[in-house]
Amino acid sequence: MSDEIQFSARGDKTEVELGSNFAPLFNDDGLIVCITTDADSAEILMVAWMNAEALAETIETGIACYWSRSRKKLWRKGETSGSSQSVLEIRTDCDQDALLLRVRVANSGASCHQGYRSCFYRQVNVGEDNQVSLKFTEERVADPDKLYPNK
Amino acid sequence: MSDEIQFSARGDKTEVELGSNFAPLFNDDGLIVCITTDADSAEILMVAWMNAEALAETIETGIACYWSRSRKKLWRKGETSGSSQSVLEIRTDCDQDALLLRVRVANSGASCHQGYRSCFYRQVNVGEDNQVSLKFTEERVADPDKLYPNK
Image 1 (cartoon, rainbow over the protein chains, first blue to last red):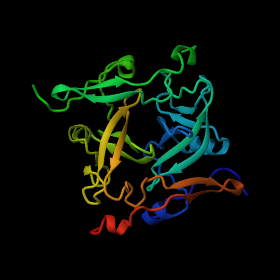
Image 2 (cartoon, rainbow over the protein chains, first blue to last red):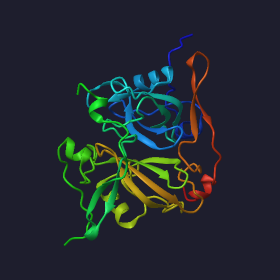
Image 3 (cartoon, rainbow over the protein chains, first blue to last red):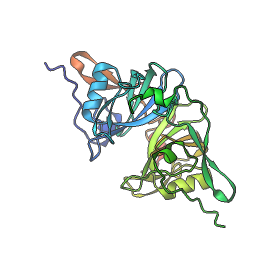
């Protein structure tokens, strides 16, 4: 028997939503959105995308691997910065077109290339006359220049 | 002066990632992905999409409004089920192509049409020979037939 990771074919709506087959829905670009959270604090760290290969590798290795849409290649998170993500749990949603990863982050703990723990370091604020702006609410945990010294 | 919600034009990478202008990046379909979490428990409730109109309405009203990709119309969450979402906070990520909502859910507390608090009610499990399946880990908080009686 093969021990490669295989996903199920998509069944009907009831099977997808209430069944036990894992049949992730990849979009027209072959990608599925993935939310990554800190397993301990429950903080949302980042949103990224996976193709089938990245998802299979993540399941096999227990280390988060995404698909970089800008570089168009597998993105083994932490390969450069050292901030790799050990995956404790993977979940999917009702229609199986989104994934949720619960991880522990190595090294500095910065999952954002800007040196923040989380990419969501800014809050949307609404001022007078409905002017919308962003407010920084988080402290950096790493110097972004040191995370990516050869950038 | 207009008091309609206006988003900023996209600046360069530094401005987008380290500036205070809110310049959400909508994809080719005019949509941006949105993660919705429970403001109290930090549980991830659902992943949905917004167009500019849904986002502006959410900011203006403080009640979550999404774009339904299946019905191709504004989706005022809870309009049928009563499980509306009061928005306490909106965040965006480094490259401003994702949103994070922190909400309180009215009524039954079921944000999933299947009657679960969260759409992420199943865990990906890996068995022998790398067989992957889904395991139900959550209890329903509402009867889905009662959430949508006219379905």
